[in-house]
Amino acid sequence: MKTITLAVLLSASIAVSPAGATDRATDEAQLRHIKTETWPGFYREQDVEGLCAYLAPGFVNIAPDGSASERAAEIAWVAANEWNPANFRYIVDRIDWFGPDLAMVTGRGLSERTDEEGRPCDHSYASTNMVRRAPDTALGWQALASHVSGTRCVVRAED
Image (cartoon, rainbow, N blue to C red; front, side, top):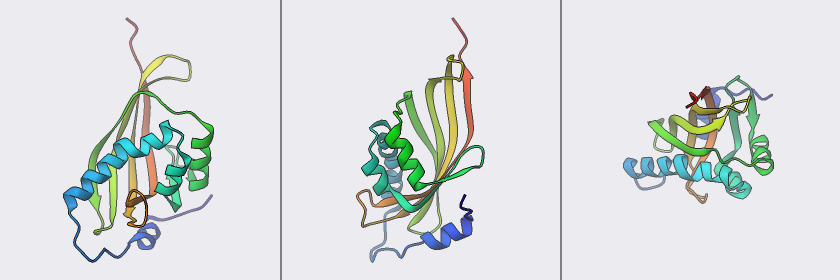
């Protein structure tokens, strides 16, 4: 397992801004769209090519139990697994900036699923994603890291 610190991630990821100043509102709208529509779409459609382009080569995913997996494992999972929970939506709660080209997108994923025993439940989790501007990529941004926590599946009351 690879150990990576936030300081290393930040220092390795800060890119030089393009010549012109960026419009923060436009950047935030684009990041919200990527996080709420594009990124989940890669999973729904098992779009390995799109996911490969979006995840930076050094991408690391930190699971709720603290285990870390690298980009190759995430891509392999998407290739091998269908993912389309009912009513999935992601809500962006905040975007924090660490310079003009590095941001942290924090929010919540919500959906209807079944728990381990097959009972219908309301599933939720919190996630934080570090992203950097990548003008030479299709989306103009790449994900550096993702951390998921607070995963819950609250069983719905029977009618």
